[in-house]
Amino acid sequence: MNFDVAIAKTLTTPGRRFELDLRFATDARWTVVHGPSGAGKSLLLQAVAGLVRPERGRIAFGGAVLFDAAAGVDVPARARRFGYVFQDYALFPQLNVRQNIAFGLQRGAFNPRRDACPPAVRHWLAAFELEAVAGQRPHQLSGGQRQRVALARALVGEPVALLLDEPFAALDPDLRARMRDELQGLLERISLPMLMITHDAEDIARFGQARLRLEGGRPVEAPAG
Amino acid sequence: MDAAWPALALSLKVALWASAIDLVLGVALGCLLARARFPGRELLDALLTLPMVLPPTVLGYYLLVLLGRRGWLGTWLLAQFGVSLIFTWQGAVIAASVVSLPLVLRSARAAFEDVNPQLEAAARVLGLPEWAVFLRVSLPLAWRGILAGLLLAFARGLGEFGATLMVAGSLPGRTQTLSIAVYEAVQAGQDDLAAAMVGVISLTCIVVLVAARRLAPRRIR
Image (cartoon, rainbow over all chains, first blue to last red; front, side, top):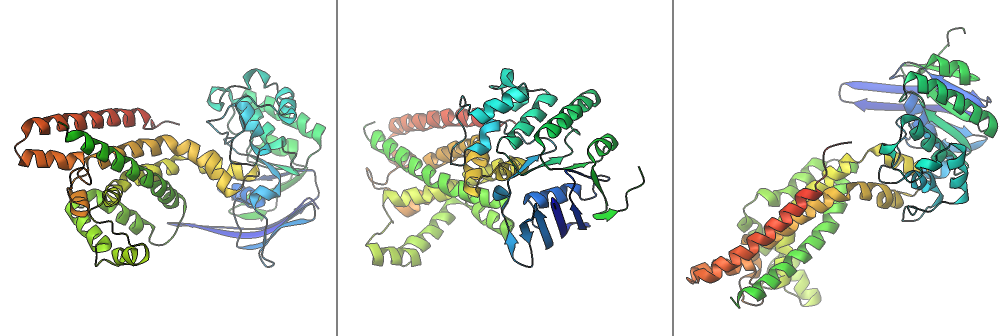
């Protein structure tokens, strides 16, 4: 089993109470979780990554238990080894492209040096055609370049799987179609399990080998097609 | 004018030490108030901001009650280490650091609240332990705001008068800071000396304020 998730999490903000309560297991290489905004998709992804702690339930990946409320297991996010691409990419604004990609390769108290370029970083700079902008900061990049940096940063540490939060939502339509092709090509080459959340029908059609539809924090039967 | 230089040196020494203490306390407490959720959080914030609005003499009174011969901390320090902080320059440091702590604390809290939590989450997912997330993401993104607050605290510490006078007194060469020396000079009718010292302290404060303004984070991003 790739992802095996059964969790419950309640969020209470003044005037609103939201309950995520779902169970899904998938053996597919690519899984797409979709549904309207506010359905709890991001919360699910954060729980899988270890950024949010569910109240009850269990999360396992590839047979390894990452979270089990009953057994008191909660592997911290830093040890789950997922590659996570945030919706707005969450690139470190004070670091250049090289440093952003190399960030997780260095675990100590200091950020990578401005001009340090380990072989793994060089590999992904080349793979995403980012060599020309390697010394630039995120705010100097185009939307597509930013996404490539975020992907490179997620992949450079050789993760066990990719978690993608609405990876194309921040891009304009032309670029979105191009980056979608690019991601599909990449995923086919590296054969890495992937869990994507999206509300875009084209993403679902392209990547949804397994599909889960969420509405109001609960899974619903997906409409045919 | 000869009386002015020891007073200026003492003022700078006191303000520097007080800023150093405020930097450590302000960053730690500012980060706590910005990130942690616990009951009494806003009360703690209000208590730590109090020195900004209370009359310095009231603060001086509190410090005397705490650190004086009969104060519980003062008694303990005397019994354990044979140390009394009253009428010492170290006492002046404590007075100045309490008075100017809110300036560092408030800018540090605001600066940490401005750091996008997603960036910290990204660092966690990339394998960093919490202390490294703080050192490599939160602190570098917040340091401009912290430094701006620190400069204000330094300027405030340099000008501290009321609480310092009550805790450390006005012993020339030992606890008489520049702002207290100005008061003494005016009382003694030494108008030229007072004017010179007022000039020195005003100029120093202007330089510090301009620097703080240049460092203050612009509200973009």
